[in-house]
Image (cartoon, rainbow, N blue to C red; front, side):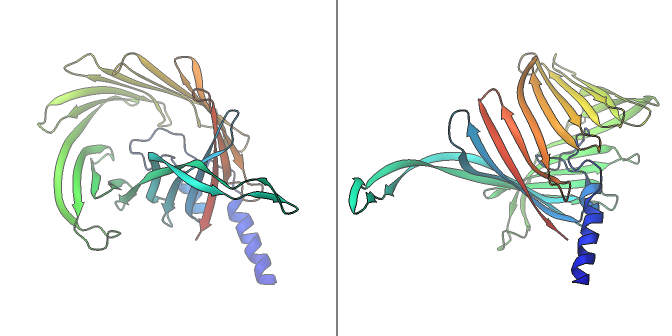
Length: 327
């Protein structure tokens, strides 16, 4: 009994921490569909998080498409593997509906009905780090092929090179990767010039060493990214990101603009509670709110237990439940 009580106190102490589990800050390299704060993952000794996703169209019953996302963490709180499902196709299946009887009398005869079966593909990605906790490789598997992204860094810790490869696995155990054929699909290198203490000029070179894109990136005195503006050298293509933060240093607003497929503006706003937990995220496209995500928390652990994604464009609600395991 005493041991159980001490275990309870230990869990209470490590889980009741006021900080943001889901990270909203801009990242250079994504480590999954959701970015998690490694410090909070480490403090809470989280080993895995699995998300179960169902859809509720307006005026209709809940649709379970067997959609899921999963994240695995090491003891440092870093994502080492994640996966997510994508809908491949739907398949109509006939199922038997037994007769309905009451007091031995058939009220409704046996029949069949058509139900839709959802066939998903699962994308798996493994993430590898160097001894400074920087991502050096992301390798994703879909079917028999792997997409791999390799990263190198300069002395200042900025990405110096990114290489995208298509690879095959010749290991008999497909859960263990052994390099077969590797084909380089693209290679980019980057250089940086500090124009001021808070402004950086970035040059992007293709695999021939020719500059094809340039950027100006601005930061505040705390190192938070305020803006980034990219221009392609041989075309009129332009990309821009703007970032605003609240008094606690959390991202409150993000605006992304581009003219790659016509003029496009995407905006996200973020609201937090008094403890710094993300409670609401709104996604806006050209002044119209297209999504609103609300986060709910477990009363004991204070970790996210679910989030509700209101999709205004498709008139539906996504219901996402979180399940945790711990070290």
